[in-house]
Image (cartoon, rainbow, N blue to C red; front, side, top):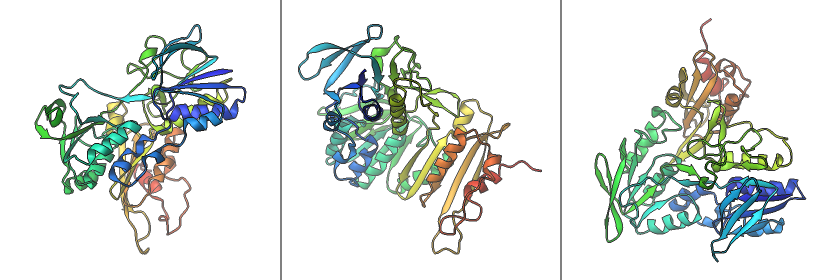
Length: 445
């Protein structure tokens, strides 16, 4: 069985490693544009901040490791086209310029994603950078040393982590986002008030509700960022606007979402036989919306990569879908979410309600304790849990994993109110805060 894998970040690496383990007859060839694989881009902010000293630690696999498994790793090779009828690809060696064909029995598309780069005037100026791969990590860290004023465009997870990293490094930071709050996809406004305040106390400036119109430069380098409402000095700009699938060569050949995400079924099949897709190049099944969605997270990618390997010869293991469960640490605040925020739920047409519970997470007779704030979002008629958010100085983020399971299994807040959780004063109160939050949503008797 000849298997070709296009792209080797998280989904590709997972698909390859598990295919090599599960299918001893597989002849695996991977085509990768870069000279490295399996880079954990979620660690870039940690490297910029100086928490992690060696950026090479963000790799968990290598071409050499693949070779030991008998995998042919064609690094610095680009796949130019695919003939699905003939089961053939056209590839180019980026080092020599040579083009050649290769054939497959099974094709795995794990071509990943690339940062969104809107057409902005003067975006070609020096020191306007992206944040995605190993090369970006090195460049950002190098440029940070001489930068004085840094503009972060986009206040999602990557952008927000970089805000802290640059501030800790003593830089003047300005944050620009079209939305009126940071982390708008994951948290409701009341859950970003405290981290926003912490940023502001440390001198971070915000230009929220503003869109970038152009950049100004001096001597070929960026000197200012111009929005629809103002102009801000910056000698380093990081674009963290979001990601789009790397799937242009498959346009009009595979079923996709409008943004180019390849639609896959519960076994990772695309619309063509013997062609699979996973990771940032593919759709996920959103259990809350009950629809195909695009959620480029490493956790989704590694799960989907494993599923490709398990379903390569026959359908064995179904995809359970996702709730976009994620977390972030901002200074001493531990924050996590799953499913939809209340604002997002209403935006997507749900008749949503919510309850918010605040209390100390363990008994006050303990030497220390911290407040926890938890919000449950649920559907009015059915009481089906749609999502949750948590914030605390104590690391209580694993509770969101529990809610993720609840959402995945269509549980209601009424059921969560009486789920059996242990009690021990070191960890919680007799009523776990998950129960207590759900109690607030119980209908009167």
